[in-house]
Image (tube, rainbow, N blue to C red):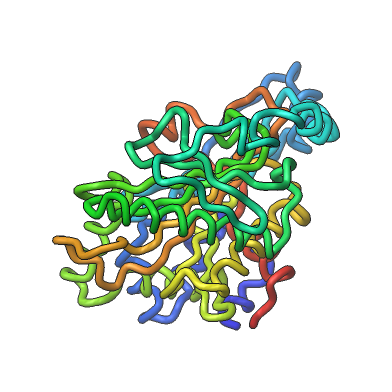
Length: 367
């Protein structure tokens, strides 16, 4: 496996790791990313010593802090990494309270979806582990909900994950049959309130757009197309290879998986596949299983972008089925994970992609 020679190196070593790449790999990396490393310095007062040692280990640890900034120049996504930020003071609740909150919400409308939720004008889609409803407060004109049979969204199996996706895809196809001009599908799963879910009971959402894809997806398509015209390469192929050369990408069952270097938020994983088949569904499950069982993640976002459901005027050639998954942080924390930096500048990220990939390799292995 390429990248193993870097051992326990982490994100703050990225400039040196990129510089050490073979010329071809480094040039490919630099076609996509710009990496900048700086040192932040401060002089703490003597009165702060105890507080600093409690939260950051030592006073010396905060005097000089290495900050790495990564910018994807193709998509203009960017992130700041400073390992000290992961140890900043937070007002934390008890993690065991999460299970209690989930259980307290049992018995709501999503626990009895056939009577507690509206159906679409074209009816419902029923899977083995889920059923659809019409979204009562719609994102778009064609906006549905995949309601899981299992109330607890953190209690899932590989079979159940596959069923949620299949049920959502069946809803999207049914919606497309109803309105042929609607052909841009999107599947999103916001797991619990930190991720934006207003209802605790496990559910995902499906939306089908007209005219063009949703803005960020269309922006990515255009960026990838421009990259291909400029370089002659496929953006997604090169993005994967740039990560794989650093030990941040792996191929499993025909699915390309990478720990993204310019994540929107923590632990962002990208998966690419030619089709939304059983292999991709399997590795969506594997990533989520690693999140919840190994990393202690309790709230996450999943976004799946299948290909358009009909002919389009724009070029989607070379655009894979894309899945993006990220962690939304401690459910019991009163500190938000997204603020002005994420909204208007670049993301500030607590997790180290090298550690995220290490955890994924332990679960998935090299297949």
